[in-house]
Every structure is written in C-alpha cells, then in structure tokens.
Length: 67
Image 1 (cartoon, one colour):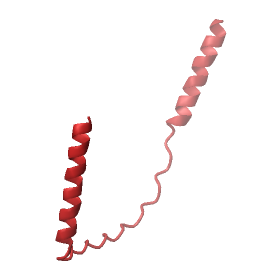
Image 2: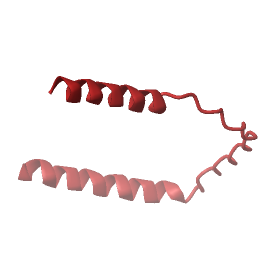
Image 3: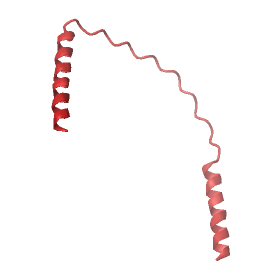
Image 4: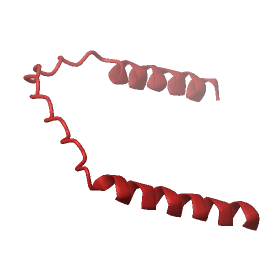
C-alpha cells in the first residue's frame, strides 16, 4: 500500500515537471497596422437613432410592467 502511494507521488512529480518544462519562446510577430477609423454617422442617421431609442424605451416599459 505504501509503495503504491509513493509511486503515485513520484508519477505526479514527473507529470508536474513535464508540464512546467520551459518551452522556447515563439518568434515575435510583426505589429499589425491599426484598423481604419470608423466614418462619422451620416446626418440622416439621427432620425434612425431616435426611432431605435424610442422602441427600446417602449420595450423596457413593457418588460418592467411584466416583471
């Protein structure tokens, strides 16, 4: 029984040593170019945003009364 216990401890140390073994560092990758900036919203988008916000407010009101 004690031999099996000591053997399991030895095996666990071997597994731990293999897991913690140092691996060579990967080659550095070149830096990526920054993403282009988003274009400004068109002037006609203001109405669409207001409609979306109004619909979200109505949905929130319905869900708050249902809860």
